[in-house]
Amino acid sequence: MSIFVAIELGAEARAAASHAIARWSPTVNAKWQQAEKLHLTVVFLGNPKPDGLAEKLDVLASRAQPFTLKLHGAGTFVTERAASVLWLGVGGELEKLHALEREAANLYGDSGRPYVPHVTLARAQTSDAFAPALSALNAVDGPGFQVTKLTLFESTHHQFRSIHESPLHSHA
Image (cartoon, rainbow, N blue to C red; front, side, top):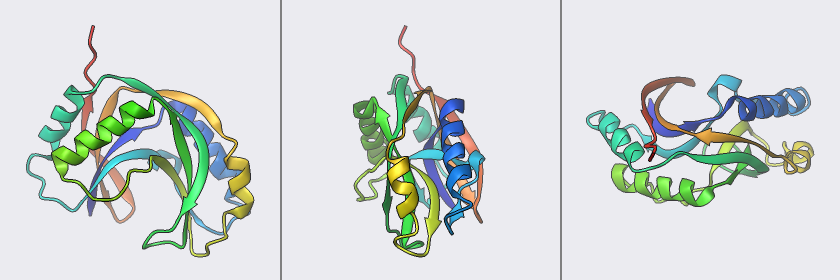
């Protein structure tokens, strides 16, 4: 089991990412993400004690105002579980996203990893698996979506479950 704080994609952004998966999954041998699991991780918490996680999310959300992001570009990186991970990048009000991530890292404990905002599309066991898709996906620019809440997710055996949501604080 692992827990993470994430931003859920807006409907149009989720549809665009799902379209990319539908376009490339028949031709690229990889484990592709299911559309309902697409998200933007703010901070990965691992397997922490559950005490206070929801309360910290409420504090984090109360310190942030809604902002706009968009899908922008694509890339790959290597992880412990896969030789290559294909992702869509994020654009828009990135300074607000990075401030939110720093605040989350301070509240929950810093993972020590540099923050690269992305939406994971697939994982493959070969490093060059995504070469055909990468140049096409790198041209992605939009659609935008409004970030109005943060969600605490639990991941168990590749199943995601929302365990707490906190709306971002809107200043009138």
